[in-house]
Length: 271
Ligand SMILES: O=C(O)CCC(=O)C(=O)O
Image (tube, rainbow, N blue to C red; front, side):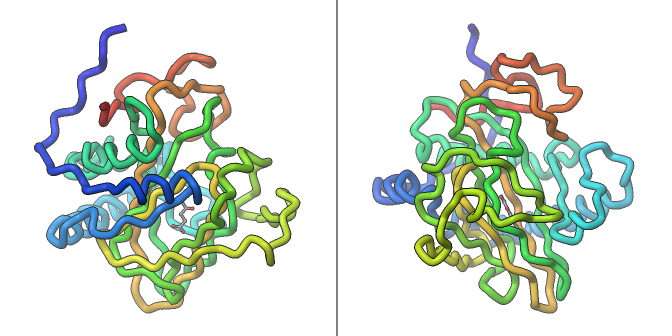
């Protein structure tokens, strides 16, 4: 099979990912990485995000927007902004971030799954319930992972993320409803007292990467400002489509049992 061409990107210095950071990711199912974006890039991304979200809200008919109002209260979800907003592409199709994902997983090539903007409005965002991501995704093989990029400084006051170390090794459990959440810990038969979460405070421009099966959660935003984050989600290039309904793949023409392929799922980094 001919290799897919990588998208043309400005040459960027690779992030100095250490062996210890890779080890931590594999052991815990997540890792925090400081300063993956520079200050000017954060500023630019905030501006682009604000404009794109405003535009997407205006065009509510777009099939990729979550329209369930209760879900929207949990977080305003905006999926695959890179397809509609050209100025997003250098950030989403960025080989620097994608190559971090590739090295963390330890695969030869990594593909984009999708992006989504995660904005908790001031004084309003309900907590994001404990969940795993992988059970919602239409993939057979595990390995997909999210880069959760903070565009504001985040801590417990405005909805930073928490992760339960090692839970990625449980594999995919039954998905919990994000609108009527049941306890993920109960589903897993875990005693919460024995599985303490790690709260991850981040500076804007820093990120976490987490495995699709790692338990995670974000608190409410009690601050007077929006909490803006951008998730870029990747999958090893060999992952196959299992046909589960999902707004990013529905109607895409992917063959059940075949690899993800096509313009929507570009390969972004390879060894
Ligand atoms: O930003 C949030 O509130 C939650 C994000 C999340 O669950 C994810 O990126 O997988």
